[in-house]
Length: 282
Image (cartoon, rainbow, N blue to C red; front, side):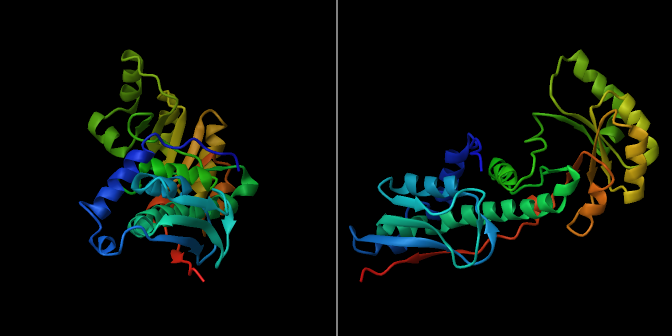
């Protein structure tokens, strides 16, 4: 697949993870005689979408840039149980010290990409796009957003700084959706996404009239989503959100909405089972 731009904070995220795990030093690895060279391979034990190799590489780049890595599969590839996806060689203590942190990135981001691919494949015939949310693992926001794209999904906002989403609590505090949207013009705020969340069908017309370019249908039934699509008549983009799972998503997609957002792909992910096995020197 086409290579995606890597997050700007990749190196910083890896540095934080290594500091968390190694701290002032790997005591166990320090007890092994220095200078021993070793080779290892990374094996996947279940079907998955490979994702996270740039973070894996950066772990060993920061520990010891002399470690050599050879990837036998690429980001976004479907991988199978028992498949070797990467080979490593270099200083044994460096391999041991970086093993868990490197695998943590690989298992988490592959889990995110794999979950996303399942949702994307389920709605492929409908032309609807799967969106992520801000329900991500703290510290891994940009990494998981990257993994969503690898899995075939589309990023919603990266954070609170790159789009406007007027949710229920904003409306409760301000008492007026339109006043919030109007403030954007007065303050010359320019963003691509201006979205309003609604919880009832009779709120749709006011949301459209507010000046938003997308309306989120929160926890709507399938029949109400269908009614919203008809009433909207393509005036704004419609996003279905809430109660989305693999059992319900096709019925939601068939309504004609433009987007379906789900937090499940980033917060309910199942980490993929990888192991690093050291090879004998026979």
